[in-house]
Length: 527
Figure 1: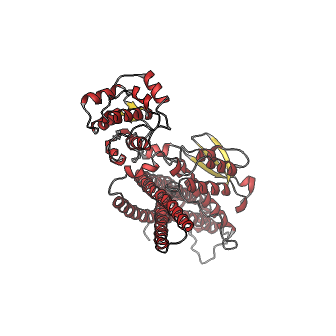
Figure 2: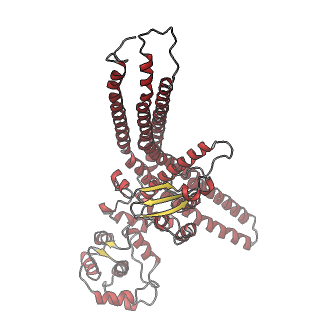
Figure 3: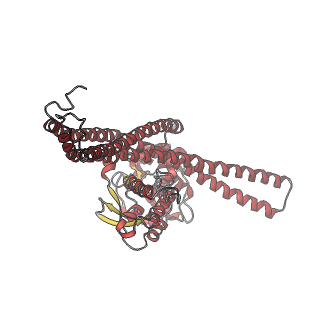
């Protein structure tokens, strides 16, 4: 194709303008343009020309009059080409000069139904919008957010708890209350209704049911859950670059909730802003429903298995804490036994060494206190490194199952309701026509039917976009699955470190027992 910039400028900006372009031109453009922008690939345009049944000479002439840049036609260049095709099909010489004779709408080329032309469109390999090009490492590297309690500022009363939220990505710390998280979560659900939005932990506990110790534990548990929530959000491939998330993590003004709402008002939900939302059906595989059902069942079973793993890990961490308490108490009992200054009765053998041994027992409480501390550290490691990682993945799995329910009870349910309402209206229309009711009421009913048809069409598009997002979120779950190796690694490392530290203390204690009680200490002497 050659360049004729002057001719194109005159034709496109003059006779061919938006007012003179038939609706058919726009429909053809929508059918064959790229999925990422308004341009048309030259290869696709060549395929379109082959459908015209024009002579090679006419096709060549049309191609010469149409501009292309870097292998693409602009929308206006395509409109010009369509007009030239129509003229050539009328037996006229395809030339832009003919546009000057058109005062009204341009001629319509004979190319068939626009929807049939979609098969001409090519999708570049790099434009695979349905597939998530992510790995676990890239997700985890997006950001790490720390949520810490600030008890010294607000106390430990539930309604006054404040958190310091620090984003590694933005290198900033901001202060948030639970209500800020709540508003942020609500807006995320509004904007990304078809995505995995992790749930928030409960806002409060029942008053008077738990002790003050349990209340502190609740606050600590809620802090951990908020930390998991914000990290899942900050690492989500679609949330991480959104202005709403950036505002929550960086805004340091006095009213973050108003700022969040204002940020959300600037754009609609994802269906309104995503460039492929209305074309989602084209990207979906034919067996999408079967794939979804299979994946959902598999993820459900994975969820159940990870819940069992978490429960066992929690029990192990609890046993380590109980072991710490028992070791400390064991040492205290030894100390109490050694502190007994009572005189031995005359019945005791004169060679009895109890008096000396008793004095030695007092010092052993120090070693058992060290052992208790090591066991407590082991419990914290198991809780922080293993249980917390399991809870992180479980939060994601539960959120996926919540998303599946939202899809079925939300989009699908609303679609079915709309179809039912449409059926009722159509029956009313038929009844009104048969009974020859007043023209005004019939026209009003017709108007309502048209509105309902439009609503159904929108719901159908949203349903396909919901499936599109579900397909991507399912991929996200499988992308996170290798976190299992991280969890197992943390579990093994915690056990190795814990047994090593405990073993070192026990090994130091063993020779000391020999010094205290003689070479035949309790480890070697049979009873």
